[in-house]
Image (cartoon, rainbow over all chains, first blue to last red; front, side, top):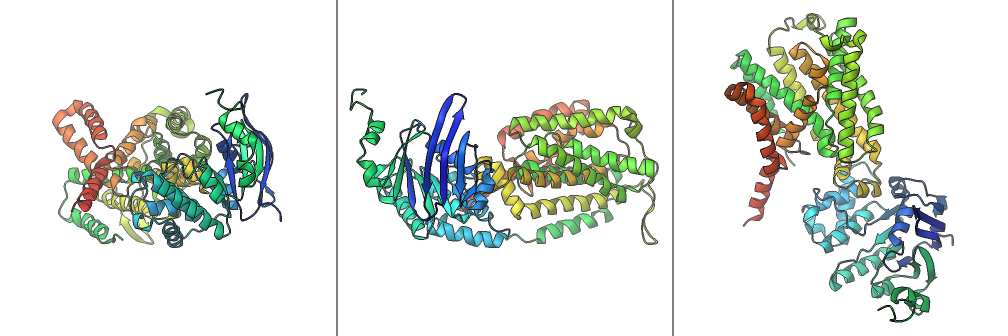
Length: 243
Length: 320
């Protein structure tokens, strides 16, 4: 089986800062890939490199076998890869429905059709009753769900979720976990940045660990949880000496 | 869905109004209103929907005016043909300018838009062979407007022909806003206004859509500018390319409500009445008073009159 997303030796430098260095991994179709690592490990930078917000300084990103580094974000989205944002970005003065309509218009020019797609996605995340509310007035939990509905409305083959559970309470996180599993059932491929290890273990088939911009480890959740290097990266090298 | 009925009623009422209202001064007020509304609506397509606050729209206003004036003066082409050439020319120049300045965001774009209008003003001032420089152009009498052999307007000295043309133009610009807002273009422009990065990530090619908005906005502005210039009957660079032309357009939309179809209409009514009232009350000082009032209005109603009304309405709808 060929990989849907293939990241080859991607590096991204900001001046002298190495935000990503020589990161390589591939994502097979239909799986949920977790991307974890301590703060500042370069997870969001990697998302930005993949989705065209900044081109990688070195290396290649292949999506469906096609080289996509150098493409602008709108073209990447058209190819079937959509992302959410760690810091949610609702279109504040548009309604919840219209937010999703903007996503749906990626694949159609008919407003009527886009509305139908948008409503369907709002229904899936359980927000169809909030359709006519302005997105700027939503609480954080619903904003995260709206982000999800909006990217799903672009009808992607692959979605990149940047901390969709950040700032949510346990019940809301559970809802998102369920949504990720539902999306997986529908055959979409997902890459998930997350800090909550429980959520990662419940949703992910494979995990890549980044640390200081480099890939530290890759494997199944079981392998990662038991990997001493991962522990060290999260908690410090010499057990509690730093604390 | 809102129906067209109120708009149709208003249009018919305005069309019948001159049967009773014949004083040139009253007609002049209405023509000023139509021009203000048309310009505010034109600006609104780019500034309101796409959030690209151009303070250089006098560029397209002046290019429309100069284009039509020069074609009439040099080639004897009547303005009702010449204006379309001028509109096309303005759009082409706007697209060239847009593909450069739309790389800029926020205040940098605003400054660039002012600079572009200023460059064009200086070009018009110094390209004397074409524009007659600071002396301006006062065109010869307009030829009669005919359809076939039927003469529609023989005498262009009265206000009535301008009243009806202005009315049609204002309604056209409102209709353009209405159509844009309900189209894919409208959704995309609003998405760009709310969050460019989010819009980009949802598959919107930013520069392409901003340029599409600019093209429509510049075309309507050039049309209205050319009409206004013929109504005044004289142009010179400062009068059509000056920054006060741009600022007036922004104010119409801002006072009424940016990014709404009805906003510039309301803003136009408020501003034209205010201008006339203040001029009568304060004579030379009216611009000063107007300036202070504008500042207060923008501080108190950042979303304009329509924004305030919409909020009231929403609150009432929410309250039991």
